Length: 401
Image 1 (cartoon, rainbow, N blue to C red):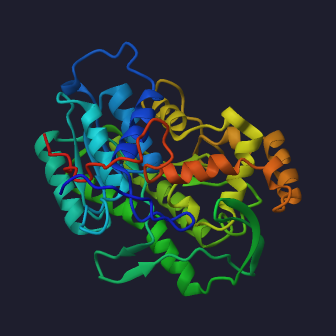
Image 2 (cartoon, helix red, strand yellow):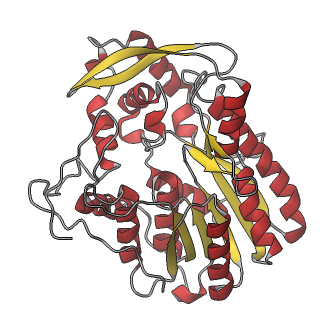
Image 3 (cartoon, rainbow, N blue to C red):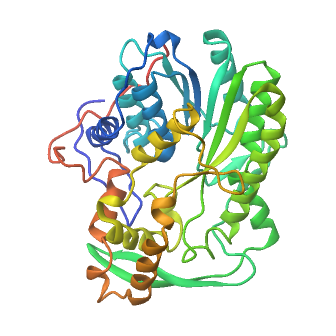
């Protein structure tokens, strides 16, 4: 297609169109904020092999960029992204993936598969590529956020529900009336058992388990193999809708899966852990009630102390590669969220939460930052990008090397 003039077409936190140059610029910034190689010997062809499932957004994207830039990883990233149509641009993750591949350079040995990671077809395609190209895998990072999942064995489609468990949830929310931030309120009725179970099927550890089983069955797990799945705990302010809600039930299943995988992989010299990351503005998190207000308050408290996904991904890889010891809690989870859950930080956030109204919000929360971060998820609000002129929206998915 020819150059197109595009507009965000957004309503609240949802954007219809993504901006190609803006998405590329976001990846450029992520790359620049990721540590460069420091004394790493050997050519790229000798680097370790990583499989990143959910490589186009959030922590999965940050983990992919860090793997490529800092460690010269070989391997495969998997994402499920929409191409351009006559009415809409390609998805933001499509453009981010294209730019990530460009930054990896012509000598990089990292491919990207556009497929539904939940499907048996994606697993077969990925394993065929890994077996033919590398033989075995050193790392698997699982960072999938999706609203639904089709069970590959039964064909049943499960839809996740963002609901509390046990009792109704009433809390403050952050909304935008045009450009004006507003503190509203929300009430959600508790989930029924079927909604809880469906959320566990979508966001729990079932698919992660299938990926590991498939790798092991094919003999593709290298000695010292380490797999991690991204998770979140967060503040007690958001616990009723998150950790104590349907999502929390799914995260508990994810953590239970990690313990089972740890036992299964131990005879092979492997390890499995969940990773408790800190707060971030992601496409998944903006859909969770109260998270927008909480994150805006947290940013106002921390300022530049709010750790980016790039910083957290770098910290994770230092642990996975053995540069520093694993930072495990009593439940054997890797913790990256100490900066968020620091007692003094949480005390300040609690005080601001209690005082937050539409009239007081400007002095308590960094809503401008939050709104800009949401736009950046789709390539908008990125400094230095020309949004007035036409853009080349037709961008090819990276070809396999």
